Structures are given as structure tokens and as C-alpha cells.
Image 1 (spheres, one colour):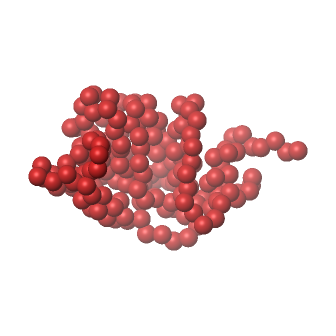
Image 2: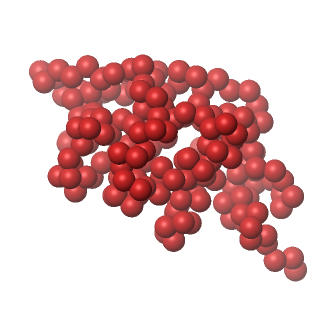
Image 3: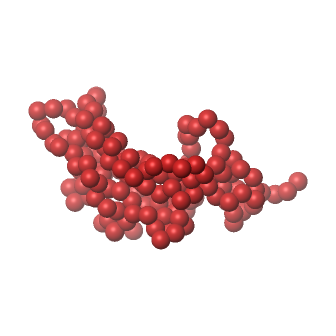
Amino acid sequence: MNLDELLHYFDQPETVPVKNEATENLANYVKTLDELTDQDVAKGVIALIGVTENRNATTWAKFEGVADDVRRHLFNLKRGNFNPIILDLGNLKNGDSVNDTYAAISEIVATLIHHGITPFFIGGSQDLTYAQYLAYQKLEQTVNIVGVDPTFDLGTVDSELNSETYLWQNYYPPAQPPVQL
């Protein structure tokens, strides 16, 4: 999939970076897909993706506006000793079903990784990790998962995918159940 084809998955964020060449804020390094060049991609790009999907969260969480709040603070940070290229794709539209959102995330991640762009998700429930995992599986790439959580969200082999069972799904997806000993 071409990068331009990703745009239909997104709404533009409410927080737009205010560029000011007199500062070293990260806002100066944020680009839209229209501004991204092949030279940028060759240098390494991080793609910001806001997510509000929470239909499979087991506890209520408010994700509306979270990505824009994070952007507001992130873009004001100083850049440090590097020249980042940040592609802000916007906020992912929720699918008609949660499975539609999983499919969209998987397609987006696979496309970005194929083009050498690192996806960075802001918001959403933890079950969306499984959709990201599926993209790496499709690309036949190994993936390391880091989660900061007070519990191990494993569930059981019979568990439905949700924010408390997503790790089990990453190791034993439904199409490939574990061998019973």
C-alpha cells in the first residue's frame, strides 16, 4: 500500500504544531504526509497515530482527546541532540466494528514498517497491541513487545480478545491454538 492511501483512515488532529524557528521545540520537526520526502524516510521517521478505540477495554477509559493532549505537550518539548522527523498522521477513525479497527491498525503498521517508518500509537486500549502484532506477523518480522502494566494480561486459551487477554493472543493467535500436552 502506498503511504498516501493511509490518509482515509485518519481525521486530522485538533492540535497542530506551531512552528517557530527561533526555538528548538519538536513542533519544528513535525510533518504531514504531504510534506514528507524520500530523504526524510531515508533518515528515519516516527509516525504519530492517535487512537480512541476502546470497545474491548475491560475497564472504562476515556481516550477521546488524549492524543491531542499528548501532542500539545510533546510538541513543546526541546528536541535534544538529534534531528527528529515526526510524521503526524492524525487520529485513527474507529471502524464500524472493533475488528475493522484491528484490520486498519494492522494494515497501517505493515505499510509504515514496509516504508521504514516507525509507528508510535497514542491512546487506545491494550487489545490494540494484538492488531499491531498481526502486522509484524504479516511481514514475517520478529517483534518485541514492551508493556507497562501492573498485571500480566494473559487470559486463557478460551479468552476473548480484550485489554486483559491481549498477550495470550500475541503468543497463540486464534488460528493457531497451542498444542495441548
